[in-house]
Image 1 (cartoon, rainbow, N blue to C red):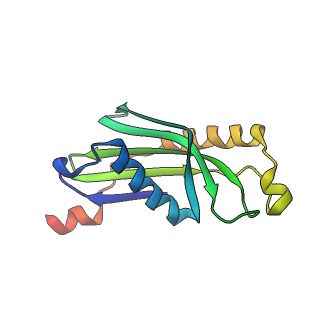
Image 2 (image 1 turned 135 degrees about the horizontal axis):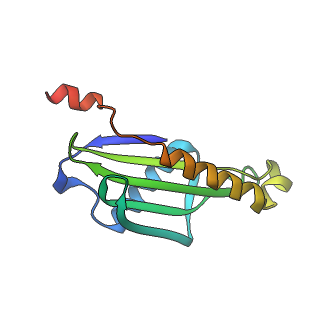
Image 3 (image 1 turned 135 degrees about the vertical axis):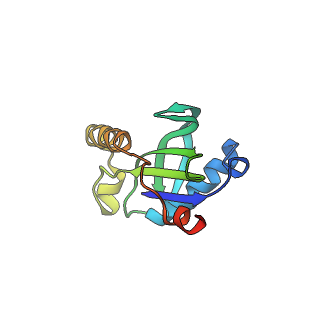
Length: 138
């Protein structure tokens, strides 16, 4: 999922709590999921041409019992001063079966393959597209 919002540099995400709150909201767009706090990795640094980009890796958990279970997710959040836009790029994977039996049974090999696919997808992201919000302002 890719979402963006028009912000100026002072309004961009500056702390972990705000970042995770926003990611939780966007994760809900993908399904009735929550972020598991155990094992959650949040770092800030350079990514591609963006300084201060946030990288988040962890697991999502289905809030409905015996449906999907859980799976890996990865996110990149960064600000582009050229467009005055903050991007949220979120990859969610599901390597388990469905239902009471399938959702409770981990499949680490499949999840590792899917996590590698998320990495490859994140690496292909280019922000050279000009959001419609940019066109409206100019």
